[in-house]
Structures are given as structure tokens and as C-alpha cells.
Image 1: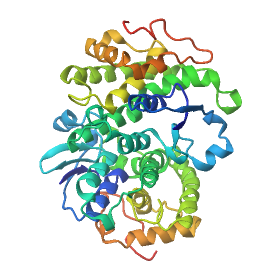
Image 2: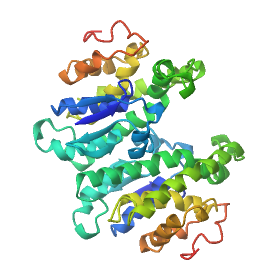
Image 3: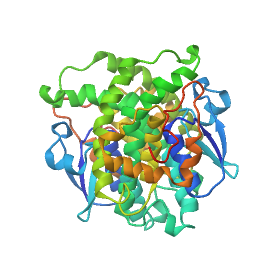
Image 4: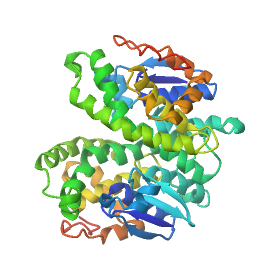
Length: 229
Length: 229
């Protein structure tokens, strides 16, 4: 598979994790979406990342589109390790949580952090780069508190986030937290259940490539790659 | 099925259309989400609408969660009228367009129109109601132009929006346009292909209940219920 992505966008990290959990090889293409390259806009007018091609066919545009595709195409072959449960109401819960982390948490927390602290440094001024908006960062730091409590309430009540079974929901939440953790903005002391859950996730082999990502001008928090933090 | 909804939110209309196309009966519950009723928050902390229960089981939270559930549970039984194609890349295109209309178009166009012109009239001031924000309306009126052109480009190139086959993508776009049409904000002259496509959609029996919805204090545009407008 070919994946157009940005290494610090949570929805892109989510799909990289899902590909790795399925043991699928991927060619990553860093896409400077702010440049709106003509050939990219032509197939993807919303400039949505991630975007994938499988066996030369596609495009597959957007994280949940890729999730459903991966599960339909490659999930059935690994029933014991499938990331989408078989019960329809459990599936609904996985999808609800994936949307929670890739849309709501992204809008309220991860998106603003990544935009202000990583993208704006990387993007030239003429394309919208520049100084971070301290108000947006302050709001994201306020928003994360409620989200950590919510995540804690489900992490402590269940084995994995959507229930007994490890699922796409864990990957979505983990992808979102990982970019915040890179920036040293994850309040791990807020809830021990969240930290324990994230440690289990972080020690999976699929997570390893994310831990060696480096932003061009922004260093990771010192503990970013530590499994025991 | 029981559906907690608001009659003028496009994602709720999308699910009502999908239920009607599947010939499923539904008990509608109008949910004053701005009140954050305790029993509603307890199962649905994001206050997301629509939310459904099927045969007493659930909750099924969010429009795309409900879409996938309906297709998995009831789609296979109607292969010739299924709203999700069988080809995996066609499915990806349906899902991409559903997300386009229920997330992107909703954020940029339908959401602001409904919030400013319907919800703020209905919601008490203490819960965030009040006078419409004329700047938000101006931005939505600017945003709709590009969207109508994009919709026109796909409506004129394909039989239905996602391809040959009628699909959830048509319901998502139709639901979003219908609330704008109610408010007289749909620029039908912008693209004849969009108007022709919408007329075909509007004349389907599943659409009829939406055409008799009335907002509490806001009258529909005169042509709202006309099939030939």
C-alpha cells in the first residue's frame, strides 16, 4: 500500500498503526497538503490526509474510509487478532470511539497542538505558517483535562477501550495521544488508568515506528520513546 | 428502531432517509441536546445526534455508526437496493462522500445555517440561544458556492453521486441540502446538474416525511415541499 500522510497528524498515525497491526507493508509519502499540489487536489479536493492506494487502486481517502477498507479486505484473514469485533453493537462502540478521537478530540485537543506547535513551524508563512496562537494552545490545554478524565473512566472500566478486545478504538486514541506526548503536553498524572493503558499500547511492535518520528524543528519530550515513562 | 434526533440537523435527516429507504419503522424522539439531560449524557457524553436503539439494544451513536449498522444488519437482505456498493473501492467512495457532506459541508455550510437560523431561535438564551451571528451566515453563504460547484461536477459526471448506483452518498448530500433549502439558502441556479439530481432525490417516497417538517418559529421557503421547483 502507498500512504500519503503527515507524520504528526493523528489520523495518519492511526492508519499507520492499523497497517502495522495487519502486518501490511506500506510506502509512506509525506504530503505537504498546504501546497495543494495539483495532482493531489485533482483526486482529493478536500486535501484530506491520510490517503492510500492499495495494489495501485484507489484513492482511499480519510482515516475511517481506510479503517473500513482494511478491515473488510484484510480483517477476515486474522479472526483472532481482528481490530473490529463481530458483534454489531460492539462494532458501533468501536466506530463511536474512533470518531471521538479522530474528530472530536482532534478538533478540541490534538489538532490545535499539532497545528500551532508543529505545522506552523514547518509551513512557510505564505501558506499559513508562522507564530503559534497562544490562545489556541491555552484552549487545547483546558480541553485535554476533560478528555483525560473520560478516557480514564473507560480505560478503568474495560480491558481495552471498546471492551474486552483490542480494537481500532485503542489505535485511534493512542495515535491522538502520541502526538501530544511528543510535545510533552500529555498530563499523564491526571489518571493512572490512562497511563497504564497507554504503556500497554506503546509496547506493541506496531507502535515502534511512531516513536522514531522526528519533527523538523521541534524536539520530542525526553520520555517520548521510553516504554516506561 | 428508536431514534433520538433533531429534525433540522442534517446527520439526523440522513439517518431518517436511510431508515425509510430500508423500509424500517422508527419512533422519533426529539432530543433537546442543549439541555444535556442527565440520562442522555450518561450514555452519550458527546451529546451526539442522531442516536438510535434497535430492538432495545444500543446505543448506536452518530450518523456513520448508524449507517454502517443499518447496512450490516439490513443491507444484505435487499441486494438490488443496497445503499452500499459491493466493490471495496466504490464503498470507499461512498464513505468519503458521506463524510464530505456530514462533516465538511456540515461544518462549513449546513451547520452554521441551522445553528444561526433555526437552533438559536429555538434554544433558550441560558442554553446558548439568541440572535443569529450575521458573520457566520455570511461565511456560510460564501462557502456554499464552492460546494455547489463541486457537487455539480460529480452530479454531471455520474448517474448518482458515488457512481452508477444510488447510495448513502446521495442521502448524505440530500439531507444536507434539504435543511438549506428549507431556509431558502440553496442557490439552485448555480448548477443545473445539482438541481436535476436533487429533484430525482426529492421525489423518492423516503424524502416525503422531511418535506412536512416545520421548525417552531421559522417558516419554510415557499418551494420547499414542491417536487418541481
